[in-house]
Length: 336
Image (cartoon, rainbow, N blue to C red; front, side, top):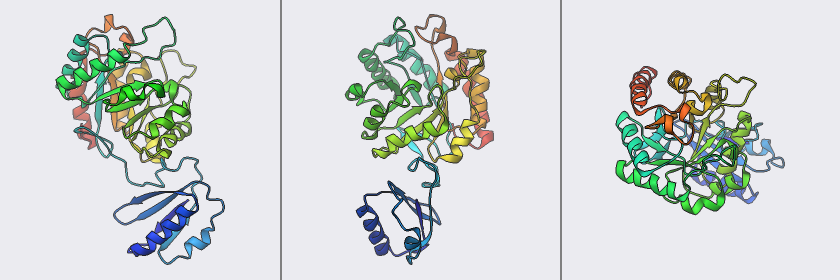
């Protein structure tokens, strides 16, 4: 339910209304725009008399929200959410690029890639320390050592780091990580999402392999219900009958999510396609579709990569793509 307040509503009456609503066991989500002030009610509103609220002198209108997600709903929060990470901003007219290797393999590798992607214009460094793999015999990541190497690269370059968490038991190890990524396989790991809702860090939430957009938004809702509103949605391709690409890149998800939610939306063309040559055109397509950013895999020696070398750009290819993206972002009125 959303309560739209009248312009110039008395602050003392607003405070009285909020106290009344809180006493009913509801959580309040407030949003103030240039001409509109909203109070979103989260919880069981079935017992609330809409006519009673609408009759209050400070209330302009009362509306029910049919969607099951509330805090993530644009109806609750009309303005775009902007998430600041270091000097970078994600959302609100930016086109922020996150880049780095699929897996952290060595100090030399991660520092080399970090320096090259920063020089090309990336604002954040990605790298996997814990790797969820389909096969138990595949490289599983360097784990704690990988996190230390990412922090070393951060100290060398100043780039904030993005890396994936696989278990709530590892959360203490992520204290110095700037953005915690929830991978596709963990999108509906609700116990993990609840724990991330209690931490004060941006969460990059990837869409599940076969998840609907509503399911993605409900996963974001789990995090936000815990008090953490710093959620970044990520379209990374979904599983369909098509086998020409690793996944099917659902480009339409980007503008749809932008309509449904105020949260920033980024795209992962590397995992969406799984093919190096397709990453540049799909990066551009995602930007034109309204993405607030991209997360792109870059490796200094893709042919020797321990994970996903086939979809990783070389530093030279990434630099060339960034030049093209900068021109496209300017045309689209975005900052990169």
